[in-house]
Length: 202
Image 1 (tube, rainbow, N blue to C red):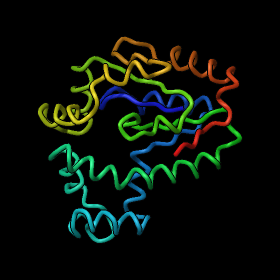
Image 2 (spheres, helix red, strand yellow; image 1 turned 180 degrees about the vertical axis):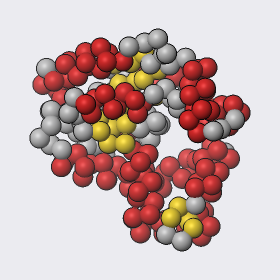
Image 3 (cartoon, rainbow, N blue to C red; image 1 turned 30 degrees about the horizontal axis):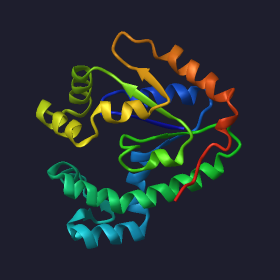
Image 4 (cartoon, rainbow, N blue to C red; image 1 turned 45 degrees about the vertical axis):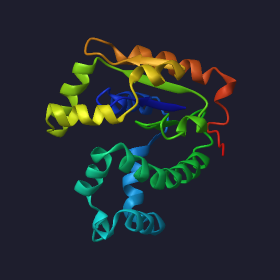
Protein backbone atom coordinates (compact mmCIF):
# COMPACT_ATOMS: atom_id res chain seq x y z
CA UNK A 1 0.00 0.00 0.00
CA UNK A 2 1.12 3.54 -0.65
CA UNK A 3 0.62 6.48 1.69
CA UNK A 4 0.94 10.08 0.59
CA UNK A 5 -0.10 13.61 1.42
CA UNK A 6 1.08 17.19 1.19
CA UNK A 7 3.91 18.51 3.31
CA UNK A 8 2.73 19.02 6.89
CA UNK A 9 -0.28 16.74 6.51
CA UNK A 10 1.09 14.33 9.11
CA UNK A 11 2.10 11.33 7.03
CA UNK A 12 4.75 10.19 9.51
CA UNK A 13 2.33 10.42 12.44
CA UNK A 14 -0.13 8.21 10.57
CA UNK A 15 2.59 5.74 9.59
CA UNK A 16 3.67 5.37 13.21
CA UNK A 17 0.14 4.25 14.06
CA UNK A 18 0.26 1.60 11.33
CA UNK A 19 3.65 0.47 12.66
CA UNK A 20 2.09 -0.04 16.09
CA UNK A 21 -0.22 -2.52 14.38
CA UNK A 22 2.78 -4.45 13.07
CA UNK A 23 2.78 -3.04 9.54
CA UNK A 24 6.27 -2.46 8.04
CA UNK A 25 6.68 1.05 6.62
CA UNK A 26 9.15 2.12 3.96
CA UNK A 27 9.94 5.83 4.33
CA UNK A 28 10.98 6.82 0.81
CA UNK A 29 12.61 10.15 1.71
CA UNK A 30 14.62 8.60 4.55
CA UNK A 31 15.84 5.74 2.37
CA UNK A 32 16.70 8.14 -0.46
CA UNK A 33 18.93 10.12 1.90
CA UNK A 34 20.75 6.91 2.82
CA UNK A 35 21.23 6.04 -0.83
CA UNK A 36 22.81 9.44 -1.51
CA UNK A 37 25.81 8.43 0.58
CA UNK A 38 25.75 4.64 0.22
CA UNK A 39 25.15 4.11 -3.50
CA UNK A 40 28.27 4.98 -5.51
CA UNK A 41 26.44 4.81 -8.86
CA UNK A 42 23.85 7.33 -7.68
CA UNK A 43 26.57 9.59 -6.31
CA UNK A 44 28.39 9.56 -9.65
CA UNK A 45 25.19 10.28 -11.57
CA UNK A 46 24.36 13.27 -9.35
CA UNK A 47 27.87 14.68 -9.66
CA UNK A 48 27.75 14.41 -13.44
CA UNK A 49 24.37 16.14 -13.53
CA UNK A 50 24.92 18.88 -10.94
CA UNK A 51 28.66 19.12 -10.35
CA UNK A 52 30.96 17.89 -7.59
CA UNK A 53 29.62 20.50 -5.14
CA UNK A 54 26.42 18.48 -4.80
CA UNK A 55 28.47 16.43 -2.31
CA UNK A 56 30.52 17.48 0.72
CA UNK A 57 33.00 14.66 1.08
CA UNK A 58 30.97 11.45 1.21
CA UNK A 59 27.72 13.15 2.20
CA UNK A 60 25.15 14.94 0.08
CA UNK A 61 25.29 18.74 0.29
CA UNK A 62 21.94 19.38 1.97
CA UNK A 63 21.78 23.08 1.11
CA UNK A 64 22.63 22.32 -2.53
CA UNK A 65 20.01 19.58 -2.59
CA UNK A 66 17.41 21.88 -1.06
CA UNK A 67 18.24 24.49 -3.66
CA UNK A 68 17.74 22.02 -6.50
CA UNK A 69 14.31 21.13 -5.16
CA UNK A 70 13.20 24.73 -4.64
CA UNK A 71 14.95 26.73 -7.35
CA UNK A 72 12.89 25.53 -10.29
CA UNK A 73 10.56 22.77 -11.37
CA UNK A 74 13.10 21.78 -14.03
CA UNK A 75 15.94 21.15 -11.58
CA UNK A 76 13.64 19.26 -9.22
CA UNK A 77 12.41 17.06 -12.06
CA UNK A 78 15.97 16.38 -13.20
CA UNK A 79 17.00 15.40 -9.67
CA UNK A 80 13.99 13.15 -9.19
CA UNK A 81 14.51 11.47 -12.57
CA UNK A 82 17.97 10.40 -11.41
CA UNK A 83 17.10 9.39 -7.86
CA UNK A 84 13.76 7.63 -8.26
CA UNK A 85 14.97 4.53 -10.16
CA UNK A 86 17.43 3.79 -7.34
CA UNK A 87 14.72 4.22 -4.73
CA UNK A 88 12.33 2.02 -6.72
CA UNK A 89 14.89 -0.79 -6.85
CA UNK A 90 15.70 -0.45 -3.15
CA UNK A 91 12.01 -0.49 -2.26
CA UNK A 92 11.35 -3.63 -4.29
CA UNK A 93 14.20 -5.44 -2.56
CA UNK A 94 12.84 -4.29 0.80
CA UNK A 95 9.38 -5.57 -0.13
CA UNK A 96 10.70 -9.01 -0.89
CA UNK A 97 12.17 -9.16 2.60
CA UNK A 98 8.73 -8.34 4.05
CA UNK A 99 6.78 -10.87 2.00
CA UNK A 100 5.52 -12.63 5.12
CA UNK A 101 3.40 -9.60 6.09
CA UNK A 102 -0.19 -9.22 4.82
CA UNK A 103 0.70 -5.77 3.53
CA UNK A 104 3.35 -3.08 3.77
CA UNK A 105 3.30 0.69 3.35
CA UNK A 106 5.43 2.91 1.17
CA UNK A 107 5.29 6.46 2.53
CA UNK A 108 6.16 9.03 -0.14
CA UNK A 109 5.29 12.69 -0.49
CA UNK A 110 5.33 12.45 -4.29
CA UNK A 111 3.84 8.97 -4.67
CA UNK A 112 1.83 9.96 -7.74
CA UNK A 113 4.32 12.39 -9.27
CA UNK A 114 7.09 9.78 -9.18
CA UNK A 115 4.96 6.93 -10.51
CA UNK A 116 5.33 5.01 -7.24
CA UNK A 117 1.57 4.47 -7.10
CA UNK A 118 2.03 1.88 -9.87
CA UNK A 119 3.98 -0.30 -7.43
CA UNK A 120 1.28 -0.56 -4.76
CA UNK A 121 -2.20 -2.09 -4.59
CA UNK A 122 -3.95 0.66 -2.65
CA UNK A 123 -3.23 4.27 -1.73
CA UNK A 124 -4.04 6.19 1.44
CA UNK A 125 -4.12 9.98 1.24
CA UNK A 126 -3.54 12.05 4.38
CA UNK A 127 -5.16 15.49 4.37
CA UNK A 128 -5.21 18.49 6.68
CA UNK A 129 -6.23 22.16 6.33
CA UNK A 130 -3.63 24.27 4.51
CA UNK A 131 -3.05 26.68 7.39
CA UNK A 132 -2.56 23.76 9.79
CA UNK A 133 0.01 22.27 7.44
CA UNK A 134 1.90 25.54 7.08
CA UNK A 135 2.09 26.09 10.83
CA UNK A 136 3.21 22.50 11.45
CA UNK A 137 6.12 22.79 9.01
CA UNK A 138 7.11 26.26 10.23
CA UNK A 139 7.28 24.96 13.81
CA UNK A 140 8.93 21.66 12.86
CA UNK A 141 11.60 22.90 10.47
CA UNK A 142 12.06 26.51 11.54
CA UNK A 143 11.12 27.76 8.07
CA UNK A 144 9.44 30.98 7.07
CA UNK A 145 5.89 30.98 5.74
CA UNK A 146 7.16 31.81 2.25
CA UNK A 147 9.62 28.89 2.32
CA UNK A 148 6.86 26.48 3.36
CA UNK A 149 4.54 27.84 0.69
CA UNK A 150 7.29 27.36 -1.91
CA UNK A 151 7.57 23.70 -0.92
CA UNK A 152 3.81 23.26 -1.10
CA UNK A 153 3.75 24.83 -4.55
CA UNK A 154 6.25 22.22 -5.81
CA UNK A 155 3.83 19.41 -4.98
CA UNK A 156 0.73 18.44 -6.87
CA UNK A 157 -2.38 20.25 -5.59
CA UNK A 158 -4.52 18.09 -3.34
CA UNK A 159 -7.43 17.97 -5.76
CA UNK A 160 -5.19 16.44 -8.42
CA UNK A 161 -4.28 13.30 -6.48
CA UNK A 162 -6.97 12.90 -3.83
CA UNK A 163 -9.52 11.38 -6.20
CA UNK A 164 -7.03 8.62 -7.02
CA UNK A 165 -6.74 7.48 -3.39
CA UNK A 166 -8.56 4.40 -2.15
CA UNK A 167 -8.68 5.69 1.43
CA UNK A 168 -8.46 9.17 2.96
CA UNK A 169 -7.34 10.03 6.49
CA UNK A 170 -8.33 13.41 7.90
CA UNK A 171 -5.53 14.74 10.09
CA UNK A 172 -7.03 18.07 11.11
CA UNK A 173 -6.29 19.19 14.66
CA UNK A 174 -9.58 17.92 16.05
CA UNK A 175 -9.60 14.66 14.10
CA UNK A 176 -9.00 11.32 15.82
CA UNK A 177 -6.48 9.28 13.85
CA UNK A 178 -6.61 5.90 15.58
CA UNK A 179 -10.16 4.91 14.49
CA UNK A 180 -9.39 5.90 10.90
CA UNK A 181 -6.17 3.88 10.85
CA UNK A 182 -7.83 0.89 12.53
CA UNK A 183 -10.63 0.86 9.96
CA UNK A 184 -8.21 0.88 7.02
CA UNK A 185 -6.04 -1.78 8.63
CA UNK A 186 -9.00 -4.10 9.13
CA UNK A 187 -10.16 -3.55 5.55
CA UNK A 188 -6.75 -4.44 4.17
CA UNK A 189 -6.23 -7.46 6.41
CA UNK A 190 -9.61 -8.84 5.34
CA UNK A 191 -9.08 -8.27 1.63
CA UNK A 192 -7.35 -10.90 -0.48
CA UNK A 193 -6.10 -8.15 -2.81
CA UNK A 194 -3.44 -7.21 -0.29
CA UNK A 195 -1.38 -10.26 -1.31
CA UNK A 196 1.29 -10.10 -2.55
CA UNK A 197 2.16 -6.97 -0.58
CA UNK A 198 3.92 -5.23 -3.48
CA UNK A 199 3.29 -4.84 -7.17
CA UNK A 200 6.25 -4.51 -9.52
CA UNK A 201 5.44 -2.87 -12.84
CA UNK A 202 7.72 -1.50 -15.53
